[in-house]
View (tube, one colour):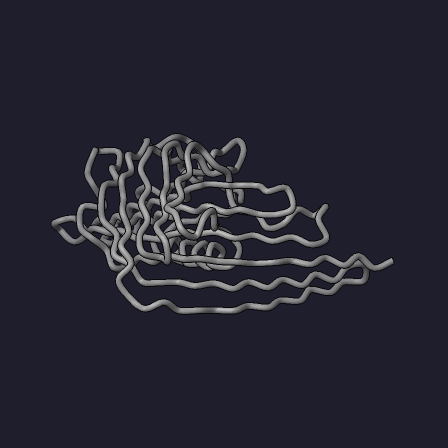
Length: 240
């Protein structure tokens, strides 16, 4: 996922990208280590991917979370939004484990229609998401947590805006929703069949996310949050 994908301005466009990222995570990202135990992921990770092009048959399983925190200045002009998305995934062949955290940040002046800051934790040199810390998922979409730090880069210039301190917890609080998606792609030399089975659950998230001033944007709990569990497979058939 390249940082160039987020070169836009305006709060509404940020929200559009966030929703697209959530859909992506719900469909193809995410992890199942041991159904009877809590799983922990450590270190920095890269962005999500589906199966290797070298593998004609593959599977991917995992968990992820989503939370959107927002605040408004006392004069009603400056809105600050943060979207946070931790993910763990396990794919075969190769028994590949991947952990990453996506962060999107926006500070917008609604009174003057000016984008003050627009950032994400994508390294401008590699396009990969950067996060140092740990994420953890409970069983059966019960809970999740993420703690660590993430550099926030300006999506237009690539400059480092600030490094965010993150300590956020999710608590599932609603019924689960199941979804099954089947997709078929056909070209003159290839047929690709993908099946994704996903489960989502509403959640409440709260904790710490500090901006460049040290203000905790995540101080107030948000119900714009969810937990996801996905299981998918892909079959690639090459035609002569």
